[in-house]
Length: 424
Image (cartoon, rainbow, N blue to C red; front, side, top):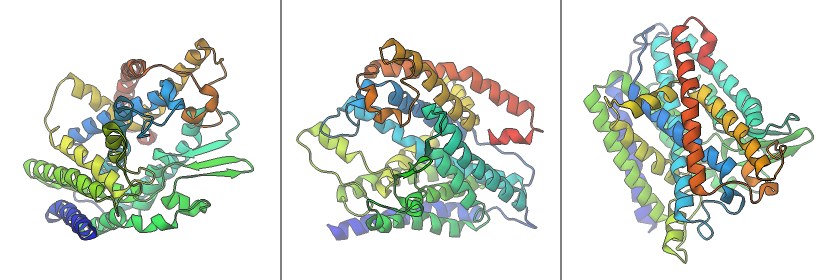
């Protein structure tokens, strides 16, 4: 079985390598610190559509955290206590973080195509530090409404910012080298699994282990360790270069092939149940429990199985979005063009809505002023709505966020001279 697993991993690596190498023959040439087409703006609408789609799904996850009654009773991924509807609601949101980080890498390639190398590096460093600060302070406050700032959550925006800072020093590397780094991190980070333990250092947690640290001033919760999100972002840079240089049909064919390979690779690696799986799965007493356990690979940090499960279908969807135009797509594109603005206001709106709901259900107006993440707050036992009610609230929040997002998109478009807008 080990031999089969090794062969599967090798095949997966080779096929991923093949996809990324397709872009090498179309490598943008750089001269005097400039990209091939400095000053020229290019935007691939299918990327904005996909980004908007995963952001809408992300809202479902966060509405579930704040409004679903069962989050205080059991984890939706628990193979014994959960059920398929609850699990699916959580599982579909697994696609958000990998896709968003991957597309953030593609954005780096687009930025580098219209700025000088020094301008790109300065932007990545400044924006990266800004995102890290915003997630640790601003986003943490939006999650908790804790005016004492006793808990700093280092989440997905933090890790995107940290990966951007790291990318400022590698974005000019040739595609072959970026491919090697991407695969080395995605395939090799599991070698660090044995180093995870019950008392990690902050540095180790920042790199590879989710953990919460208690200090005199409060606590720091490392929710998203850097590895292998860094590899996902660098893979996205390669995708961005391919979008800029490859003929459309060739690019779509490559995306489809890679999506299929990764999706099948997930099945093989997960069935192998060895290397590439930080959390192993087991046959449960029910068929639904077994399905839940199988389709729940480790996310913190993301295992090889997790990345293959999420990025494979994401690439397949991306290959089908070229030249698609309808009202739903236009809505999604609006969200995809203002991702950070959307991220901030969606948490704010959800949290504000939860305050009167908690008061109405008898938990008091202060119940949603939290000192820990809402889903693990034991004082909220019995608060919330059914899964159907959660979906209704999700739909309402998405509709509510459309007009502010469209306004911000148009404001950014009509004021290109305001450089600070690029940070929101």
